[in-house]
Length: 282
Length: 261
Image (cartoon, rainbow over all chains, first blue to last red; front, side):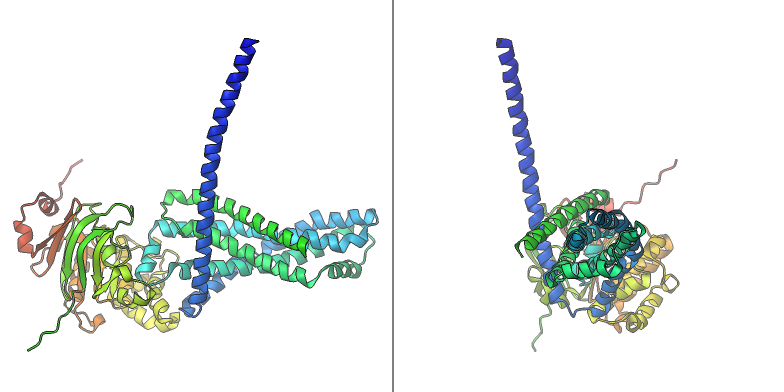
């Protein structure tokens, strides 16, 4: 009995020791997360300030860079998004339409599509794909430029690094994600119907799109646009912050890229949660 | 007869040099130094002695930890967007060039011009063409820096720094990694800039270079200083350099040790 008590005591003691170190680690992580949030907030405000303050500065240099970034984060990704839209339509939308038709619940088709594809899957999936494809490239490009001293060289030439490197990327990302979200939603809805049609679901294209149109309100359009732009802005800020804000060595760049992608996903999910609250309230 | 006072181009008083690598630790302490218009200064020091940080402080790109650093009479501590015009009177050539790798040589040279003067590529093309010709870079105009040898990267960095026609040019270790022919070419070109080049309409340029080899800059018309163990010492002319007794100066004057394998 005494032996058993001793063992139990030891166990409790071990647990206590473990939980102490766990709390310590958790505290450190939380503190670091708060510092990162503070840094990201400050960086976002600086970028917004520069965007407004230098709207007319060096247009002949900045505007082509903005166009280039829109092309990179938008136009160049259209083929990939066509493929994803068709896949999403076949895998999710088509099956949903087919199941709803089987159970005779086609009346709910419009509202289901709006909630699943327009409000949630479309913007979030677009943001994740652009984060992986362009966000990572952003961190690596900017991190390498920072590590090789190009930022100091810009400052020496009187060129604001935030204006030259960050503003075009953030604008490009916001425009790109907004446009690609629209393409993805339209493509997924259209290919989804095609899949349902192939499965002999008794629903005409007119009825299908009429139901979706009736389920949409002006608020859906406004919030969808705002959400897509906010996703783009957040991803642009997170990736540029990690690439630029701190002195880096070349060997740090890959580690920072991983961290930026993780934080990008977290922030997009947080933004999405805020919008879900907004939808629930309205 | 009244004499008008011309402030030094660069003036440091009791400056503790701020470091780019470690902001908490000064690279040099109590630096007192004046550079007058038209002078050619050579600041020598061993590797990691803080020469680059000294130049970055002098250009207003890194703030001193303590003391006052003035460029054309304007304190660098008060540098902001409004004082940008003063800061751009100083040109900076980084060690290794630090060129923008996503741009071609011509685009690198054009960037400061286009950004500061809001010019299109076509509008800046004439000036860029002249600069590339001056520095014999025309054949490499469409190459990216990563495809160039160090010799040409250094010239591109110099062309980029000259694009805005600065009045004071700071060059960090400009001879490092250059072949003998390019070293001679660069020294001759800098000498022409200092005496008055057609690019500056004959106006003499004030120059400060850093080096870890004093012998390469031997010239009676130049002024010399040494940075060693966080201490900045003004030596004066070449004669003073030769007669200096300090170990650091002797090391910087020493012939490189030849080794055989």
